[in-house]
Image 1 (cartoon, helix red, strand yellow):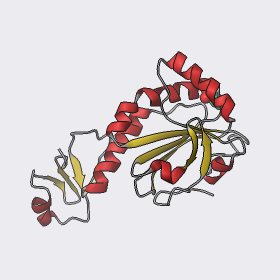
Image 2 (cartoon, rainbow, N blue to C red):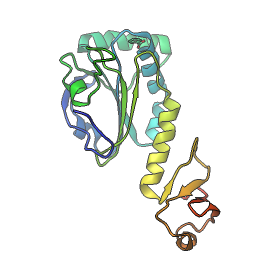
Image 3 (cartoon, helix red, strand yellow):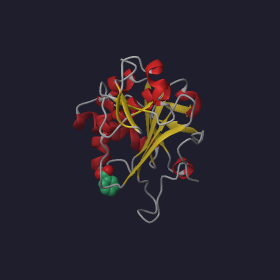
Image 4 (cartoon, protein in one colour):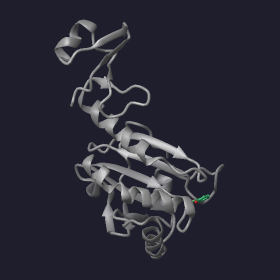
Length: 211
Ligand code: BEZ
């Protein structure tokens, strides 16, 4: 099954390093990040999980819970977390799902057989409080993800969920946003009282509305 933007994130129950969870109940009202890691005790995954742990305050500011999945059993996960804490100088403070039967990996289409028959690729889903999929990223096993980019996308997703703007290339918090094409230019001052620039009739910018 492939999981596409706008779909409801499939629910599941799973054994994790923090006990059994029902995924949707665990998410509650939060945003969520579900990310797959090809296997335990592998070098790139070790650095990725360490980075997510060290960014926990940043995810917390964004009301976002992280959860990782690897197709290894729970007892192996525990030893690996000790290594991650030691080598990445952090404390893993989010659950790691054990998926030795690959049921969740299949549910989320995380195994791409032409890349590897048994291990997952590096997939990352951002799930909104409505349980809908807002972002999916797929990286090969050989390339670690950039979690600053994941934070940047979360900022954009949370802004654009509540305001009639989009965010342009390389946008970061505090920078001008793009007014949605559906808004008529004559309506902009009423919606965006901080002002706007019309660069082209289809390219209008406004200061970030929620600051
Ligand atoms: C890693 O996480 O380091 C890794 C896993 C599978 C293949 C290559 C690298």
